[in-house]
Length: 435
Ligand SMILES: Cc1ncc(COP(=O)(O)O)c(C=O)c1O
Image 1 (cartoon, protein in one colour):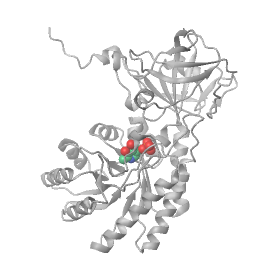
Image 2 (cartoon, protein in one colour):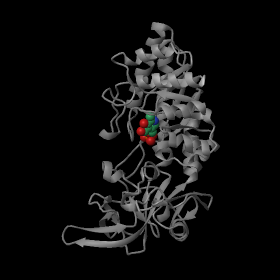
Image 3 (cartoon, helix red, strand yellow):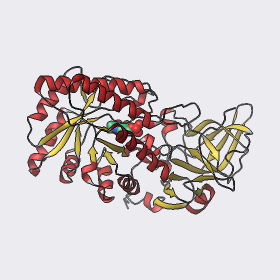
Image 4 (cartoon, protein in one colour):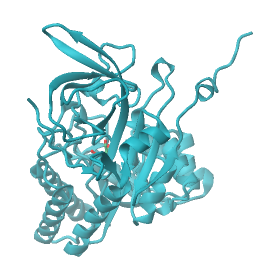
């Protein structure tokens, strides 16, 4: 029977504690389903990344990939820690503006940014626009002309490295919808094009080789390839990159099956590779930027659910149903992501059965955890799903017209509501009557 090995805090009443707050009190005060973040865990992870760069004496930016979880409070928290953010849509950018986030610390990504989105980014003078394709170079040129503006740009390239991870998460290989391919010469062509455009300041290159990666060698290979490319560009036309952005993708522990190294160890390996390769190739070491999303917010997040109905299928299995599901965490249904859950009132109590944890949505595939070892549960018990902080709330939907859940930040024993639960009125707020 599976054992529960996730690290979590337990208070002196034996309850799961999140950021010093009793999880049962959170469920009681804010209702379930609920996302609760341990804010210190987020701060610590950002600081760990930063300290690796400091120790290696390189210029850097830790740019939080906000697709993992974007909200005004989250952006404010990243800013308090001196981090940058990357955004991939007008909506994420708008959230950053409303959070008062410094625009020069924003990178704007995306493989199909619209004219309107590029206009917004230029008006806001974001730190850098990461160009993904030739169409976008032209669009941005038009926007810059219209606004009589300049902007920093980088090229997203595909280094042809496919990291060892789940198929859907791979974005670094040649056969990808993202970026300019290095091998075929597309990336060099894009560089030459951008260098002819006076309104664009070509900062450097970016690559993201995948997500939930557990092995460091994929990053080392990518870093090698990127430095080779920069050395070649330097030799051919004297181009010198100021920034090398190696993306995110550092794997985290969702279940006991996962055994990742600490996220900052990936960064240490990347930095060392970049330093040694650049010195070997005789080019200046650029600033190194990273874009971790999952590793910053994933382990810090907990989804709290209340147990409701139960179905025992004789000789097959038991289903324990909770008051949320695929509407607040689509990852298990979308790509068979695995999680673990504990009983919030007593996370270490002896296991008595293995059950399937089902959601309340009208889809057979709405299963949150296929096999979870648990003590006996009853309706009203609170279950805490662990490591749900990344790509959970940010992919939440209103499927079955369920209101989206609330999010709280917990730190030093205090809980603060940072996204309020949607109401039924919110749900119909965009509906128009035909009568
Ligand atoms: C360009 C880019 N940067 C960063 C990330 C963040 O990846 P992760 O959350 O796995 O660290 C992603 C994720 O898809 C991405 O596409």
